[in-house]
Image 1 (cartoon, rainbow, N blue to C red):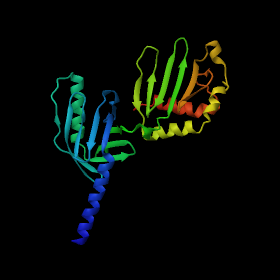
Image 2: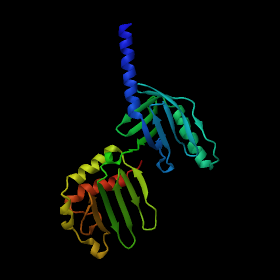
Image 3: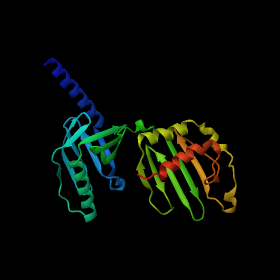
Image 4: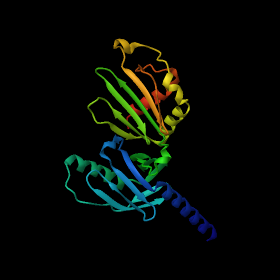
Length: 253
């Protein structure tokens, strides 16, 4: 009995640790490997009440969940009954069916994956309530423009906004913690004061053979900006940062 009680106590501690880690609000990024970021689907886990709730594309839903080590099961999920478009109804059906088929989970930093055995059903990114955790002191802006081109990428508060032409509304995606860390490592490696005097390595922009590019970094109330350079050919000092930023902006979910 003593050994059995010890195992039970250990299991309870492990379960509680997992519940504490999973607790919080998540933005669903994909279901069955299909990107749903633009649908703004959410999951909210409350470890105090063992309840899960969120937005599933048309209605809000709520229900219970149970965790045992790396397994998870959801109780019956109740939804509101709003009338929605067929596309929204289909998104909701897909999400709720995925939740009902979930029996395992994986949590890596802010990235939550709900699985059926080893098959990923839902992937979601934890939304940080305290923006200080995302090192909000940095704002990184890269702009490339010509008479027929306008691209602007802005990293701030753990998100990247992407604007592909002057008239469009920027799209925004939430970066993973790994992506945030990678970008911050790049910018922290620079002496920002040097940006103001970096020499452009090429001059194609003067004959309309390349778009004009500018990199700007704002930090703790100060702004540091490079002189104009050819898009695609930054000074070597900022080449790694530019490559990382553009790579994250173009990355598919």
